[in-house]
Image (cartoon, rainbow over all chains, first blue to last red; front, side, top):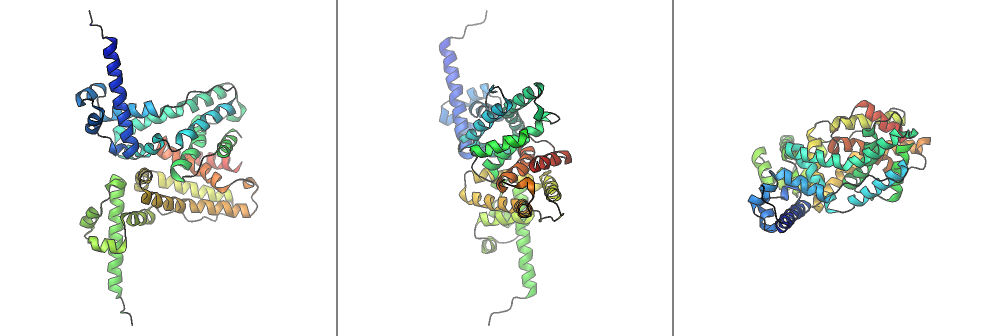
Length: 190
Length: 190
């Protein structure tokens, strides 16, 4: 018969995991992906490297979970209209892009993905998770016969909705205000 | 009377400058911005550090010129129609984004810009140079009374035209084909 894990031990494990993830995320936000070292995470979190590697088989696995658990993707909204759903998603995205640690750290993941196939996989999974709610609301509206979406590929619409916001945050470094969000939605639904 | 600089010396200076810029760009493409070191540029190009610093007062100045001289912005097209001009610019941009050293290196500049104000200035200047032809054709068409542009801010249109291409290259990593370019232009001119 398998030994029962005591609730106290469970809690302790959960706490160590959370501490490691938090410290990883802190290093990521401060110095980009190049700034994350398992040595330093272990030292600063007080969790041994052996324990860290027991939970995460590789540095990439740790990075993926650190990113995924903090820069959490939005939930799928259900406002009753496609316009309302897109407004909720883009407004939430605009907030997530506004000076948050996640938005400061993300370019370092894009950069590393250009050279490191393991990080490219991390970036691909992160991106898919972040875009999932957009795809969900577009596909739901399409299935419901929304006229403005007929004959359009979902992936094209996602690029037209999200691309301009990413452009303003990381490339042109312009503010993303409500008027801009509305203009992007208007253009997508025309 | 000022001493005349001999044409031979002029040529030699031009050659050293070109060698240094090429080596800087090579390092940038290979390892991102963190991979560029003046020491290594000097060693590999055979141009002394003193000479390098005579031409470029700082590492950022060298990086800016290396990027600007290789990832050259497109010229302003004159096809006779706004649609034709945008098609020429976006097709050329799609080519520049397709696996070129420039497109591999650019995220490292975005990343460094998040933490280093000098690199943020470099990125700002690069971005302005890359977007200038888009702004030029939009403003020319606007001045000529192009109906589809009335009441729209140029900066919003640039984000809607270029943002989706950047999104596909660096975020979703999807191909940018002619059909996608046409869809982006159609949406912008509707």
